[in-house]
Length: 253
Image (cartoon, one colour):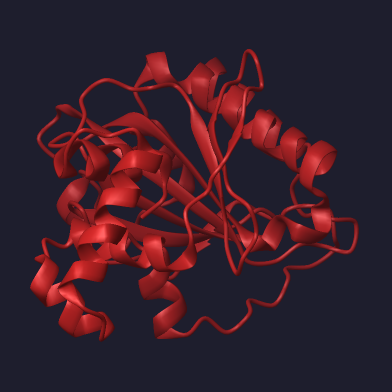
């Protein structure tokens, strides 16, 4: 294990489950999982247990993306794919996420958020690609320490090859979102997108036209057009391609 990876492990040690046993995994419905995953590129997911850093519920697509022996992947194997120059950013970001939650949001709401940032990882062909990391904590221990987390990694180098070195905390079930957080300054911006706008954003990323969106949401094409106009304005984007790129990088969709 490299010294950089050891530093990352030390960050998690400060917040991981300290109970004497593994926590029971809550039931995850297909809809919950589907709403959490962003399929803008090849992706895989797994659940990590911070009690012993073991992983489970690993999607088979991980073997198509990384050079792992099928059926024998560990969390350390995943960590070894990280670009050495990105590990320090990941360590600082993981620490910043935990600090922001405990100081600004409250640990009682940590399960209502999705964490999002990007890093480079080594692919099956030996080349590094940009990956979008999303994490949803599923359980906490009695002391508020990390229990189990659903992690989703999506290859997005077709959208962006340069890291923004920022992270976002996306609120679920009506909670506010905090965008473009910076490890150095702690700058944050509360998202102003409505639930309907987030829903439309997701359909836009899937390539649906205004007419298709109108039919799917049972609203008029004119209403869809107005929604798209408002979304572009709020996101400060000139076109749909820029909107989708920024929305993916920030974890909005």
